[in-house]
Length: 471
Ligand code: ADP
Image (cartoon, rainbow, N blue to C red):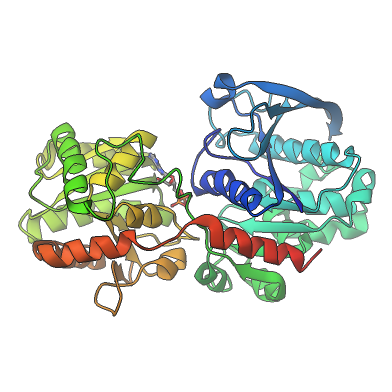
């Protein structure tokens, strides 16, 4: 089966969050199962683009409203990621540093989708499945089914995977002429609450909709940033398929970013050496349990609760722990976290920014990973942490609920709490600190965590089964 994934980001080419990790791994594992999975994404100007060799495979043009665009599709020559990777350049739209966050994102991503559909429409065969991801590519099913120029693609099965339903790509109806000429009777398939809502359009038009964990699928019927009723209405075609992790990239035995490689057999010693390096670099105390947070500093991750929770934990649990944070996002949270570096010397440190190497070292050297998320569609961090023997301390939501069992339950290995509140976070830190003193139990739980297999093999197969239902 030939599967074309359409995505805004893909690791290691360009990454802003978990979507990149999925787009960089799922196709590889689908190919491993004997299929032909390909990825097409915008030609972001990153180091990966410059460091690799590309062939030009197609050139075309289209109009979008009153704009006229030429586009070029290039393909990475060596297939080094384990799948064919295509990048789309559209003059003036993707020669930027970041993946998202520009005033013209609506124009950039609508143009990207038109270019992709235009390109597919010129293939001399049809792909088996077009699999789109999040709102940046969610207009593709509508365009394939309703735009006059592309209607010969209407029979190609489409799947939408929602990695995060908070962001929907809203556009005013004043931009309706951006969509290539379409059957205007079908305008309702673009609309939600009087705006063009690409994510809602994808949910309406794709033959199947998946979210990245079963619990998140359930939660969306009650909390979906305005789309609750749509999820309830379309529930018949919606499924939750838990993300996997790329066990080849995230392997403490071979990870080249960490100081000392280790396996389940020597987990305590291996983690100790990595922790030593972290503690030396960040002025922390190796004897105390090390709590980390890695991620976007935004409300979804309950990041604004971290400063108060850390302060409370240090003062009320007598400084029996250390914290190290890595992330970027809300400027107010960033500056508070920076400020605390001088008020909690020896107990806390942080690095504001994005740092892949440091993230790997932190998963390897830390004892506990904090994830108090308000919303967590799947969450990859907790799965990486488990693989590196670091205990996740998580709020019971979305994918966190599906992947972490509290150590108080039979077979458990993590810490779970219910409220995204300073009280629940601090109490969970207390539970973790107490557990840490029981060295034997800690070792047992670390081994238990590392033996869990959250690899992509199973989930990649589930997607294939899903495609078969619509072929
Ligand atoms: P989301 O996609 O909502 O941001 P996920 O848990 O699904 O969250 O994926 C986050 C990914 O991004 C993980 O691979 C995590 O290690 C990585 N990450 C997030 N912030 C940073 C950062 N500041 N530095 C390095 N890696 C980061």
